[in-house]
Length: 273
Image (tube, rainbow, N blue to C red; front, side, top):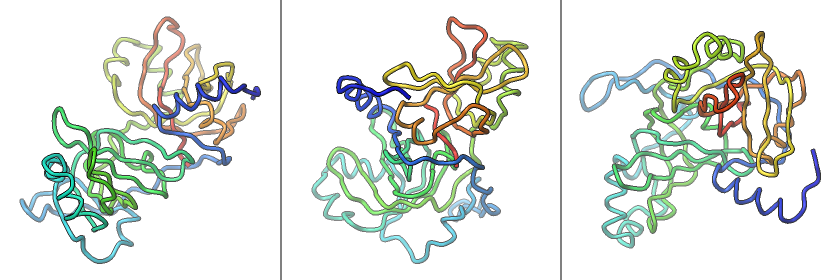
């Protein structure tokens, strides 16, 4: 990989702040976590809410100091941040809601799950220092999260979070060959089917292009003429150190194709260990 000057490094920092995913420790990619255990009934309605205990959630003991929905916590913080901080600060808070976005931590160890708090509002930020939440949940997932409130100033922010329960991951799992075949057969139908969705794609590296100062383009091998492109942030791809013919698994947002009809792409790609 090329040596970058100070200007390029500044560009990288700005880019990565937007994508929220950097790293420098080399990692081997493996499989996603095991499917969680059987679902439990919703304690309020008695109906199956689709969420199941996670492996990490099974190890959590005790009860939370507060249990509420993300929107209720957000509204309290919005109304009076000082009072909310005094009430919830450093207390164990348990939230149940919908995932709007998932991003990786700077070192790819842990990350932040953004819970939907209502229209025209910021999200509730739930951060962890371990694991790979992007391999477990995706936008649209319903989760139960427990953590400690560390800030109520700009929006509710929780740290040391653990996902106790999660609904089945809505990200679509495919091989690079499967995605390429679908796109080759009917590009418009494939774009419509996956538009805006998260995909988990597994395949072998065909080529790595690192000429750009802000991102690296990793192409996966396919049987046909259509190539699968995974766009990583520059330092992030250095963390996973992909090599030609290496088998990797990534999650990313389906980006379709622009001018090059022989390429179908994933943006915001993150590695799955």
